[in-house]
Length: 327
Image (tube, rainbow, N blue to C red):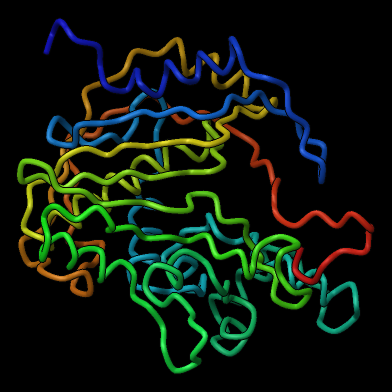
């Protein structure tokens, strides 16, 4: 392996390409700027190490608990808040701020809102839920019959066991009925789905996972997404009995926000460390058995965290300036 480039360069090279050739974009809602290219792909052989990027520290605890949150079909942020993972704090606070402006609820900062989610179960039930987010759509896709949902992930994993040559093992999170101004006024999703579908495939006894991500924040979100879906590939391999193959990450619009350019330039000066290794306990024989404590990550070494500012972009844009509830 000494004569080959570190696999992290697949990611780093794409960062450099965006800096060198990205087209300037301006978000029409909040005017944040970015550099963007369209239609790219990177891939990682998961048998050669777990792609938790090393040129900056990636928030592994957040990756682990968020993926469990998805896998268990949850859509209320209380689980994450209870485990001190705050990556989803902002989306459910949006509709609360709408209610505040109308005088329907007490004034509350986001920190106060999250503290109340943690300590007040009734409040969390009412305000902590994010309907039609990834976990619900993976495991409880809504159908025209109110008494029936579809567990896409269970079906897809069983499909590749029943038919190793299956070409249809797809899990989709893009439901236009509830997205943007395709949605009815009172049903618009609080969060724009970004990583919107993935497919499982078995080749030579190894299961690979390909993600299509329509919109990708290359500096902040993509390292997290790589780790999350690579972990999902490992879990699928464990429950299906196959060896783990590749994680393939296919992008639509892939971008670097203007506010992140200095951090990206710093990251590109750093040499990658060897990837860590990851294993899943053999106790995990079904999706529903999986828990975060079943994952063992070893030998993760990274450069320091790079500080950043989160860009809140995307979602519903009101052409008339009147707004939609929850946006």
